[in-house]
Amino acid sequence: MSQPYQCPNCKSNKSRFNLFEQTPNYVKLDPNSGDMVLQYTDETLEPFHVKYQGPKVRVQCGVCGLMEDEIRFIKQAELQKKQ
Image 1 (tube, rainbow, N blue to C red):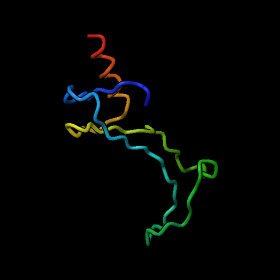
Image 2 (cartoon, rainbow, N blue to C red):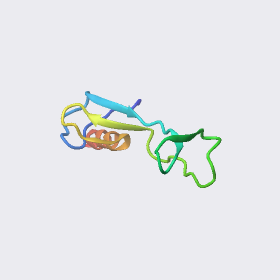
Image 3 (cartoon, rainbow, N blue to C red):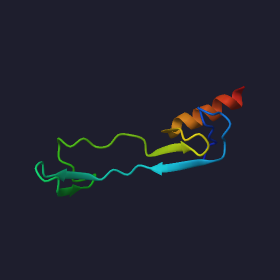
Image 4 (cartoon, rainbow, N blue to C red):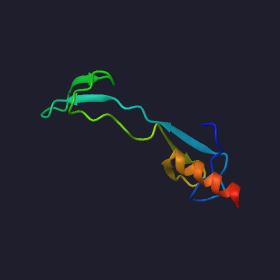
């Protein structure tokens, strides 16, 4: 986070945010009990286990509560700067 944010919903908040780091835990569960059978790392994923491709950070506006990908808040700040 080295760029300014602005909430795309309320458009007034430029300083109060909650950042959620998304770190995947790759697991294999027992289909009957739901117990964890295996825990994988990025290097040990099986060929049919899709690697997480989502955003690393999600942002929540500390004023209105909107939660979106970080890029939405960055782009809103860039758009406001141009106006």
